[in-house]
Amino acid sequence: MSGLVVALDQGTTSGRSVVYDADGQALASASREFTQYYPQPGRVEHDPGEIWSIQLATLREALGRCGRDIGDVVAIGITNQRETTVVWERASGRPVAPAIVWQDRRTASLCEHLREQSHEDEVRQRTGLLLDPYFSATKLRWLLDEQPGLRERAVRGELCFGTIDSWLVSRLTGGRRHLTDVSNAARTLLFNIHELGWDDWLLGLFDIPRALLPEVCPSAGPLAKTDPDLLGRAIPVTGIAGDQQAALFGQACFQPGMAKNTYGTGAFLVMNGGERATPNPGSLATVAWQLGEAAPCYALEASIFVAGAAVQWLRDGLGLIDTAAEVEALAASVPDSGGVYFVPALTGLGAPHWDPEARGLIIGLTRGSTAAHLARATLEALAFQTRDGLDAMLAATGLSLGELRVDGGAARNDLLMQFQADLIGRPVLRPRVTETTALGAAGLAAIGAGLTDLPTLAARWALERRFEPTLPNEARRALYDGWQRAVGRGRQRARAAPPGARAAGPRGR
Image 1 (cartoon, helix red, strand yellow):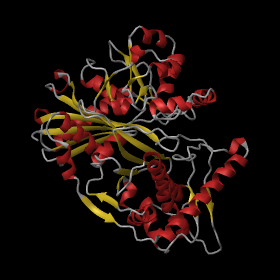
Image 2 (cartoon, one colour; image 1 turned 90 degrees about the horizontal axis):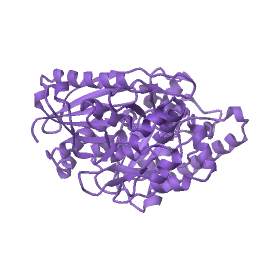
Image 3 (cartoon, rainbow, N blue to C red; image 1 turned 90 degrees about the vertical axis):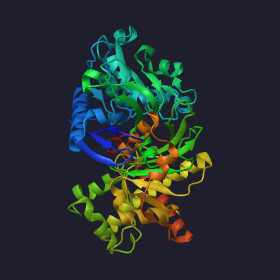
Image 4 (spheres, rainbow, N blue to C red; image 1 turned 30 degrees about the vertical axis):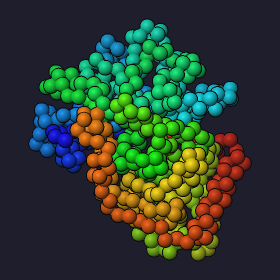
């Protein structure tokens, strides 16, 4: 591998660019936040033009920081917030509306209407997903229905739809290419993950004109070239993947049964499912990536709505800690949670329950319970929810898990990582490089450009610390049984609550 590879990491709140050398080492990075718009309760929007400007600025800034110029870049990889929906004019490249973000809930009633018509099972079989506003299809339909004239223009082929990867490729190429990769297409509710194509039945269900849709490409290969006038010369774009699939790739989870968990505000547990998709009620099935003309690699995904957000609630809601980093020391000041369980269903429960009406619950309190016990129960809740998702995946696939690779901010918490290993009865591995999303995009781009291969990338993955399970099986079962009882209580109380008191939140990241 020679030259530089740049990863464009376009997230929900910021755009980032990372420059990697021939050995896959990060040389420099740059990041800038962009504006979040909340026009009404439940609505979240971005300005596509601002996203593009920031992403381009960070690319130039990162190259400047490492003392290199665009002439040294041999490939670009893109990873992005998934499901966020953009529509723009094919001729001018001008967005016709703000981007509707994956967090947006404005189409909840449409999803409920489709569920009431008994479409969800068929949708799940074709897409691996659920009927939920999280995904792109109902966002796109809303735009076509609510913005005057858009549907007619879409039918005439004047407009382009895309997720953020498509939008960035369009801008990078001066509007010459309208494409997406299989991992992003698989998150739209319009893509048949078995046939690897846009699905006519789904297009009919959501009333989406085919003329709007991008070409679907592999995740690695000669996908596009940048406009020479933009950066001074044409640079190949050779890798694209949605953020969680890119993180799985960056963690070198290349074999079926390998899995990673990203502990952020929420948590995302993703397992390599091999060459077959396994739609099931407990977890999502999706396309992980496709390398050139090879068969696609599938994945299962469990979305945990509240992970680090539970720690933020201890800080901001209860005032038990001044900074999130203090939670580990507070939790470690007691040997266990003292029988306290915290079910952090602050915006409903994700996988495997998919219950937006579940409510948060703290149970098992006694006169001896302290802030430290609650802090420990909060960290343990992250591990319990991960175990829930993992059990659903393993039951659906019949795969076995040898270890769990971890990243994200809370992966630095040693107490949590040890409890996670104890609870799942398997080693938890924390890598030296925890910025795995950008690393995965760079790896895909390097493969797409013919600069490296999977064995080389797997050999580069480096361990920082391994957490071995030490808890006896009987104790593990007792702890998990208590958690399951607590979750059951939380779901029962939600159904007994008055309608105005029920939780509402995204079935998403």
